[in-house]
Image 1 (cartoon, helix red, strand yellow):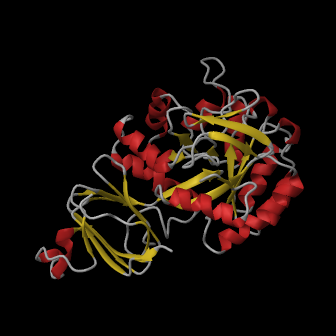
Image 2 (cartoon, helix red, strand yellow; image 1 turned 120 degrees about the vertical axis):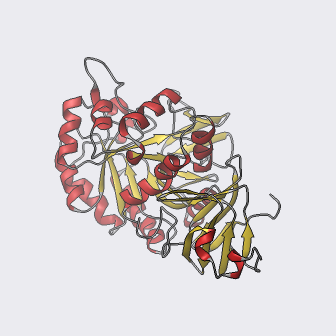
Image 3 (tube, rainbow, N blue to C red; image 1 turned 135 degrees about the vertical axis):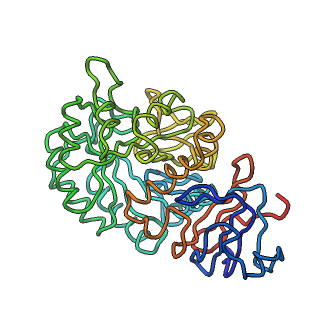
Length: 399
């Protein structure tokens, strides 16, 4: 069981707030909520801040960073467990694995399967959403293009019939947060409109759409690009395809998998330059092997081989999700891509929280919000994780 931080004051760290970085910052936690986040000087009169004395609940984090808990809106599993097929214990094991890597808010993604199975799975996962373990359900497939199927079974793909989309929404009992569609397929635009009517994110992905077809889907209400650049036509100078339409439109947030396999650093730089930090969401697209190791796994009905941390279909060799955790994506963005830490925090916490409609509770360090935060050392490695006031990874003194 995680230890609850009933009353904790974090001092001395660089604290990343919505307004920017505060040197020698201070974050106070009472129970499961943040009660204060700002400069240490703002708490003059409190003995733990004004005279340097450290109370029993005070942690000196000099040399560290304190950032909001990470929010992953596209994740298929981890810790050896699948969100598409695992038991409740399996799902919770996967969730816990990602929590240990800083993801305090997680949406469970399914992969293509038979409609009845996906509906049954939606009902099962909705119970874990209702008890607070998951932040919602994302259906990736079966309404995607066979031309850009990636690691999805072609035999199970189908056009996005609004009636079948509605069947999944009903099965999820209000917990569906996003559906990925190839919106150029028959029924695609009507399905986008249906999702918008029900307050569910319509995401364009695994698509073979033209530029013009993508614009039509955005105008119909689509707001997310599922793992931009991957499982869609490449950017062309005469046929720009979906990538150009998704990058240029202010209504679209683009998902990026920053694992060094799915994207060249130049592609990531292009996305940040064109879309801006306010329209990027880092995701993992993780499968079972995340936080677990190399080996042979199942992704839906397909066999996946993971070697040197890269997941590929055993037949055909297509990339099959990732083994990424969001702390690795953060560290890579800061040390390899050289992105400003404030931009990384927007992409890994604030933006996905806003998209999911949970930014009133998570996604930033502000008084009144859930005590979800990540402590990083000077090299951007995990040094502590707090979720709803409970230590998932408790900081070790002197580290």
